[in-house]
Length: 472
Image (cartoon, rainbow, N blue to C red; front, side):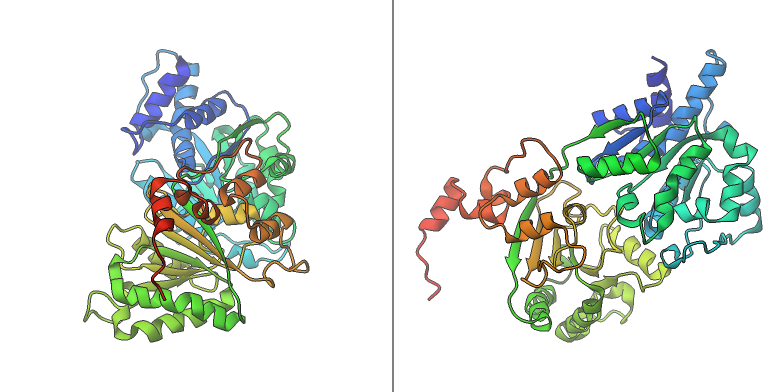
């Protein structure tokens, strides 16, 4: 009973007082309420961030009622709970901080400006704190919700001292590892502090930990738990299938420069014709090709690349944009802010893997990959950016034989087999790789994938196949 009282308090006191929590969100919150370490594998768009947004309020209410069952639960000002959220990307952290500041919670981010991905092992990280009193507030545990890169709490002397200080030892109520698959992808040789997050968990032995990701098969889940030393961990795994996404893959012949132009020039011409009516599209490609396709788009659209007609030639008025690691944090934030607007002018984003984790843009209609990611998990997460509002969307993969060569560094065998498969439902192949039991195709088949579309037996498809071919 006390759980539901505390949960109700946290919901009413949040930005989501009218929200209907999903069953697995409630289960995650209950496990954290009971102090049980949890690994939650929930699909993109399920609302993982809402879980940790409610945690400080809920766990504060629990503490108050345990101390005094007759206690009147007061709002925000008296809350002393501190929630640590480990997150990988500056853009994701900044987006969450801005949203949560509106709740009245004391929210901040530690070390979100530095480009931590370029750090060398053992390099000391200095916190970029623009205000003198922010460091003082951090030191005394003033903030209820603290976002940080793992490097900011493990490699940084300031972060380590803060973690072991009395305010944090007394008031940290839970630890959230967001985008927990980064432990697998980065923890060995890229951002090694992701592989050392067990040190943070060990600093708070009586504090529950929740690790969250959108995709993880059985082997991935074991690696995450082992890395965090979560010995008695509750696993919550939801079916990640997104029925509103249509999957297709297309073989791309020819040399790279010709193939990239053959794919992207028609897209640019279509954008020229439709302008802001063009469906919001993300095109994933290697960094070396982003600049080439960007210039190609400029040459196709000319003065019409800016909207509305006659507007100043400024980035904020351009119909397409780039999003990749070499860009400044400010440029990335501006792009994300525009994309989150209902009347966004940007219709095409040329992106690398830098555009992905935690990006919450509901109206993306098409995700295109020119060349496959290294793993099925990456591909599924990146295609999961599409259709977060539940509307029909597409995921298209272009590949060639060099993309899936046996000697391709880091390419997962499952990704290679996915590209080579010709007669199996693409949706089922993806879900099987994620250890989903009894995956099924969509019906009708033309809403499922390009393979199922070719054999769809619905009336509409049957009639279309009966129509004579007059293209000649």
